[in-house]
Image (cartoon, rainbow, N blue to C red; front, side, top):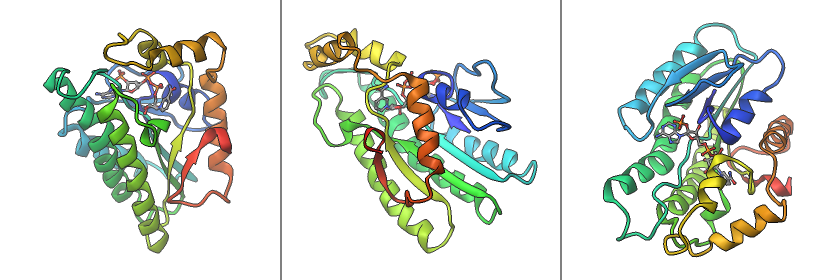
Length: 235
Ligand SMILES: NC(=O)c1ccc[n+]([C@@H]2O[C@H](COP(=O)([O-])OP(=O)(O)OC[C@H]3O[C@@H](n4cnc5c(N)ncnc54)[C@H](OP(=O)(O)O)[C@@H]3O)[C@@H](O)[C@H]2O)c1
C-alpha cells in the first residue's frame, strides 16, 4: 500500500512490487494502471488520516498476508517560496501533508497491523532536505526532519514491542514530476534552482523504477534495522 502511488516514486514502487503483490494506491488522482485497489484521499485533510487507517485495516483483515508493506510516499513542495511570503493556506496544507499526515497515518497503520502474523514494514520517504537547508522549502525540510525523528523513536518502540520494521528512506534525486516542478521554480522563491537544472542537464537524476527497485532490495535486506534513516544512494 503506497500513499502517493499515483505519480513518481510511489507509482514506480507499485509498478515494481514483488510478483503476486496486491497493490493499493492511496492518493487524490490515482489509481495508475496495474494497481489492484485505490483509496481516494486528500492527505492535507486531517479527517482523511483515520479513514486511510480504516482502509488499511480493512484490507489487512481481508486475508492471511505473508507480507504487509506500507509506504508513505505522498509529498509536496507546493508552495515553493519563503516563509512569510507564500500563501498561508497553501503553507498549512504543506505542513499537514508532509509532516503531520505521515505521523498520524503511521500511527493508524501500526494499529491496523498490530498482532498480525506477517512480515510487516512501514516506510516513510525522507529527503536530503531534512539535513540541508534549502531556502524556499522550509516546511518541506522541517517535515522530513520530523519524519526522520518519528522513525527513530517509533522504530525503537517497535523493537520493544510491535515488531513492525519502520524505516525512513531518502531516495536521492529522482526524475519525477516533483523534480520538474523544482526546475520550473522562480529563483526568487527557490534560489538554488540552478543546482537542480544542472543535475538534470548532467543526467544525474535517478530513474524512478531504478530507485523503486533499490528500495525493494533494501526492504529485502534483513540487516537494515527498524528505526534507521537510510540514504538509498549509500545502500
Ligand atoms: N523526486 C525526488 O527527487 C525526491 C527526492 C527526495 C524525496 N522525495 C520524496 O519522495 C516522495 C515521492 O515524491 P515524487 O518525486 O514521486 O513526487 P510526485 O511525483 O510529485 O508525486 C507526489 C505524490 O504525492 C501525492 N500527494 C501529494 N499531495 C497529496 C495530497 N494532498 N493527498 C494525497 N496525495 C498527495 C500525489 O498524489 P495525487 O496528486 O494523486 O494526490 C503523488 O502521487 C515524496 O515524499 C518526496 O518528498 C522525492
